[in-house]
Amino acid sequence: MRRTPLCEPTEVYRPHPAVAIEDFGTRFLALHCADLRLVELNATAGDLLSRLDGETSLQQIAQRMAEDYCQPPAEVLADVLEAVRSMAELGLVERVFPPKEPK
Image 1 (tube, rainbow, N blue to C red):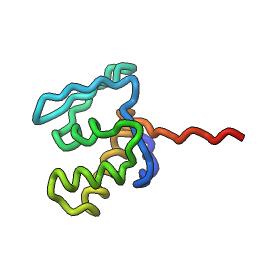
Image 2: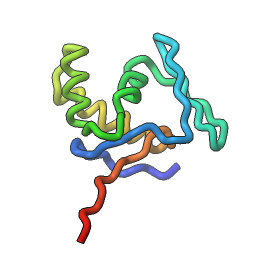
Image 3: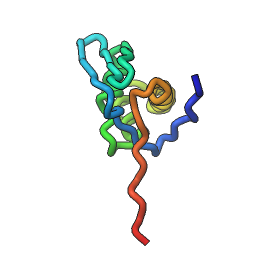
Image 4: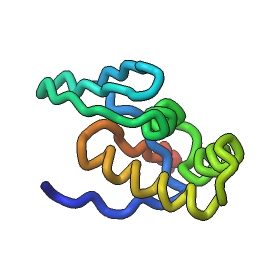
């Protein structure tokens, strides 16, 4: 498997359109419909995935999660960046690029 480059805090992600996500409370299941691959996520990873809305930066998401979980922001940011990179490698999420300015 090819390693995805490290994510940057200012990047924005969203769930891949071919992925269906089901919340079971203490865990989440993500089904990649293109190849019928099923991935189990713990509750925290599922919470992160649900916050990837295609508009909010990873840094902003990490800050909110740090507040919600009463954890140090720097540690949460590092965890968020690593988790999103792993999710991208699995094809669960995709980066959203800003629209190009008209010339």
